[in-house]
Amino acid sequence: MAPMGIRLSPLGVAVFCLLGLGVLYHLYSGFLAGRFSLFGLAGEPGGGVAGPAASADGGTVDLREMLAVSVLAAVRGGDEVRRVRESNVLHEKSKGKTREGADDKMTSGDVLSNRKMFYLLKTAFPNVQINTEEHVDAADQEVILWDRKIPEDILKEVAAPQEVPAESVTVWIDPLDATQEYTEDLRKYVTTMVCVAVNGKPVLGVIHKPFSEYTAWAMVDGGSNVKARTSYNEKTPRIVVSRSHSGMVKQVASQTFGNQTTIIPAGGAGYKVLALLDVPDKSQEKADLYIHVTYIKKWDICAGNAILKALGGHMTTLNGEEISYTGSDGIEGGLLASIRMNHQALVRKLPDLEKTGHK
Image 1: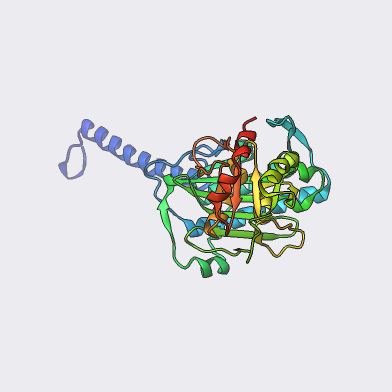
Image 2: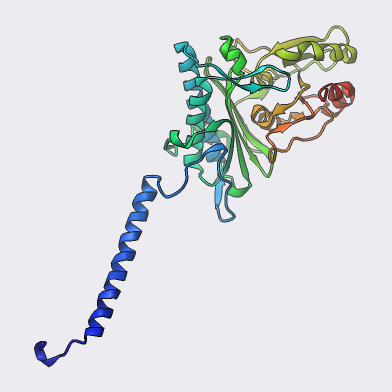
């Protein structure tokens, strides 16, 4: 018999015990979930070319913070690019053929830069879509933390946070632009790039040159650390083009602008955009226009497009259409980039180049 004459019902004892076990279960499962989340085990790692798309309740992200992380990612990736090149052990291989029939090369520099850049951005902004040139292997997942410090030069230009819905953002990463030139040790052409597009429109871009350690960045309606040159030659422009088809552009450019037009063959889309700007890098050539006449990937051009747009310039297809940075990862219509020129007048002068780009 229980003390004080109280009888314990077996059924009541059973119910009490079950309730106690239920409380313990929920407390313990919540503890485990917190531990798993802390160590990054609560979800699937980012993988493939694109990270998972943001959900409808993904919250907002601050573009000023995204700019700071994008600059850091480009520099960190550039450190890997430089380290591999200086080791002279590239582990070069071909991913296949380009549309022009050339080898689409990849090196350890591409892979290691991609890993650093992707996971830094993905850790800082887990709810945004990230598209990158190289495959992201889940087995190589890293947690690369950002110290949440925004550099003074960015704070000076972008005074206040700029919040946008995370689901509207697409990030484009090029972990090593000009891989062909990288394998040939033509270092001046090599860049790492990050671009952030909002609803398909490029709003911030970063182009970093690993071997001179120069970084250009700009935000549309924000600020920049780079500017346009004071003058450009619109009548007989210097035109920067890809090394692989300089002759094709030269023929049409001569018909359009005359024989005094200078063609500058160069590697890397990032390098070509910087050729249009006032860049304090002695190895950087200067041009008035950038023309590309064949298929090109969006991670090659998004950062440059954002920088030009922020500075009042233009990058369009050869027939003058704006480029959307959603959907497919490439564009068919070639491109024309200019700054401080009548862009649409230039488009009208180049009717044959758009046709050439589709051959």
